[in-house]
Image 1 (cartoon, rainbow, N blue to C red):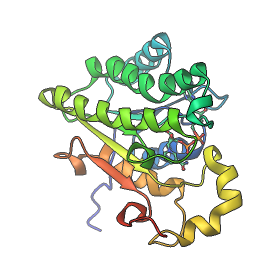
Image 2 (cartoon, protein in one colour; image 1 turned 180 degrees about the horizontal axis):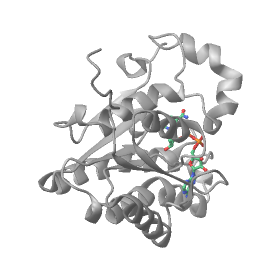
Image 3 (cartoon, rainbow, N blue to C red; image 1 turned 180 degrees about the vertical axis):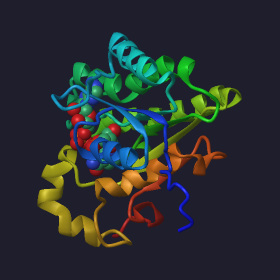
Length: 240
Ligand SMILES: NC(=O)c1ccc[n+]([C@@H]2O[C@H](COP(=O)([O-])OP(=O)(O)OC[C@H]3O[C@@H](n4cnc5c(N)ncnc54)[C@H](O)[C@@H]3O)[C@@H](O)[C@H]2O)c1
């Protein structure tokens, strides 16, 4: 050591994370804070962060106003909040399908619209899609539709916001150990893990580390990307 100051990879950056009360969002808030970021941790659950319902434009306005009041700008938006609904497509209640689209797709769009006026050049927007943004599982029509569409939104936004110096990328996680899929993991972990090239399911920190790369200046020339974080799952054709 030469006595120089050690700084984090997100030192001084102002970051809004949605769905930050638990699961991947919580891991991202903790990792980003440890790398020197100022975090606005939003969720609809009771937790230490800020109340932010991603489906509400008013809720976005107050979360962004808080960030701007405290820190003067927003450098990173991590659209992580998401929900699933499980039913066969022919029985999926329209209200339920709409609710999933509202949270998983319109939520990130409202977020983008709220933060862009406060983003300096060099800022980064990260949308959490899914391997279900590339292919479906049974009974996931609402979720799969929302995650495909979120990839489309990501690419459109990458084009529209590029001239403003704002990068927009998508993360596509495979199976990650969080409350969202705990019932699947509890029952099938061994089978899921043995089907993956890397031999284990994902942990929230695996996704958070990838999000850190996209949030930081290390990815300064990366935009419009679909980054799969899946233990190698998509490298394979289906096992027969
Ligand atoms: N866990 C997986 O296997 C997996 C795989 C692929 C993609 N994902 C995606 O990763 C993201 C994070 O999910 P997770 O696995 O941590 O799940 P999770 O259920 O543990 O966390 C999701 C969080 O989003 C919050 N949320 C729900 N509705 C909200 C709203 N209207 N406004 C604000 N917050 C809201 C929830 O309260 C919760 O804290 C989601 O977008 C999910 O679709 C998860």
